[in-house]
Every structure is written in structure tokens, then in C-alpha cells.
Image (cartoon, rainbow, N blue to C red):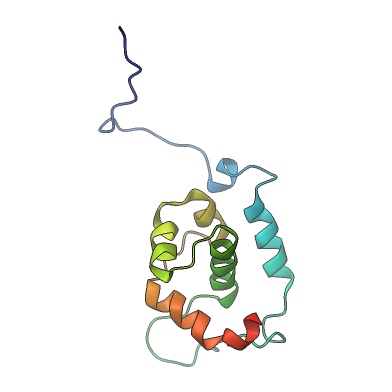
Length: 118
């Protein structure tokens, strides 16, 4: 009996598709993206950073909100699980432009903006 054999994982390949090509036109991440981009986050009470602090530049609040909404809709509640999904989930990479915030950043965003979520 012949078995179905996958590709050799050590074989070099050239992938010519962009992230946008890999996401269907009717995928829910496109709706999340449009919705969050339509919001005025300052008016809703989300903390915005002005770039005057020293150290690493902050992530855009809209990207972290998109991550949080995606997690909520897909039943991913843990900041550690969201951190892991940022590194392996193509839909999420498309949605948040392939940023990879750590679990502390994700958790801190939710804590700082708890009132804005209600």
C-alpha cells in the first residue's frame, strides 16, 4: 500500500505569496481590521503614547486592540496564548502586521485600558 507523503521539510522553497494573498477576502480578520481602524481610540479612553519616553518604541494601540478582539472572538483569553499565536497564526500576522508583542505587553495593555473595554 502506498502512503501519502508530504514535502521534504529540509527542501528550500521560494514562497511568492504575500500575507494578503493568503487571507481570503471574506475572512473575519478583515472585518476586525476595518472595525478597529474606524474607532477613535483616544475618544474611547485608550492610553496613547506620544513618543517622549525613552526606551523601546511602544506598539500601536490599534494593533493591540485588534489582537485582543481576535483573541476574544476565537476564545483565546490568555496573554501567553496570544503571544504564541502572534508567531504562528497567519491570520493574526496579517491582522497586526506581523508584530510579536510579549505576554507582558499584551496583559499590560488590557490592564491599562480596562475601563475602555466596558
